[in-house]
Amino acid sequence: MEIELNTIIDGVQDKMPHLSTRAELEAYKATILGPNGAMTAVMKSMGQVPKDEKPAAGKLINKAKSSVVTAFNEVMQRIEAGEMATRLGPSIDPSLPSPDLDRGTLHPISQVREEMVQLFSKIGFSVAEATEIETEHYCFDALNIPADHPARDMQDSYYLPDQLTVANVEKHADEKYLLRTHTSTVQIRTMLESKPPIRIIAPGRCFRRDTPDATHSANFHQIEGLYVDEHVSLLDLKATLDYFVKTIFGPKAKTRLRPSFFPFTEPSFEMDFYSPDLGKLSNKWLEIMGCGMVDPEVFKSVDIDPDRFTGYAFGMGVERIAMILQGVDDIRYYYQNDVRFLEQFA
Ligand code: DAH
Image (tube, rainbow, N blue to C red; front, side, top):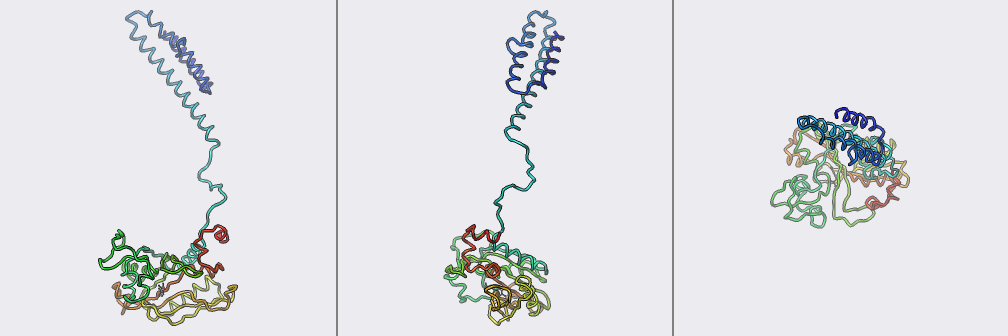
């Protein structure tokens, strides 16, 4: 019996590599394990085995059967793997770039924001960010903006419902949440977190109740700048703004500071620039930002000693710069997501 069983096992081992489809496997399996199969025949012959040899014979048969079944399972796995590979098609390398043609690009506003962030980071500014939901304190009070300032009017800012809780923005019971109206809030949050020297720019989204027209949008973007240290002077501000304007609008561009007023800077200015190479906008003074020396009242609200430290701040609209650079004459194009518009900046 042992010889017969070994012959069957050897036969199965020899046959295995040649079985390549389910049908071939099933047909061959029947000749071994089917009702008329070779293994079945050996099992049937157990009847003639003398009683005292039966346990040993049974063991031999079981061992042989399990080795044959294991062999058939292996063949089945190989066949299934082959079928799966055929279904999946040729192998791919997922680390290669996608072959898709229509890939997205940065939005034109993001492109300009990136360019501005890059040029300020080259001269030592790091990027600071804060929440778009703010409290009246950070948006106004800490910036020395008085209670009767028009920006604080219900008609000018987006106030949020009183019952709202914003887990990551702490608020006093007697003030309101609102969507920030400018990025100057980041000045305050940064000065509370870190002490001078501070040199940051804060790009971000702002919100005002403006009626949309060619130059106004209820949602827009600003970039804020803040530099605080000992001995920071107006000359530092002027030099930084000159560098900014010449880098972004070309070396022939000139800047000018015009006296103005902001509650959080003293003195305050509007900065205009002028360029001979700006198409339709050439050779005109264009106003692009507010700026000034940080008001001592602001330093007091963040516990920085105004007798020891001075600083400058500036803030400008990203859309305004983008419109000048990209020759766009209506701010609303930026938010309509019309691919024909966006593609021009891809
Ligand atoms: N926050 C002002 C606004 O939205 C812009 C501004 C003016 C920012 C002067 C400044 C600044 O940092 O110094 O109109």
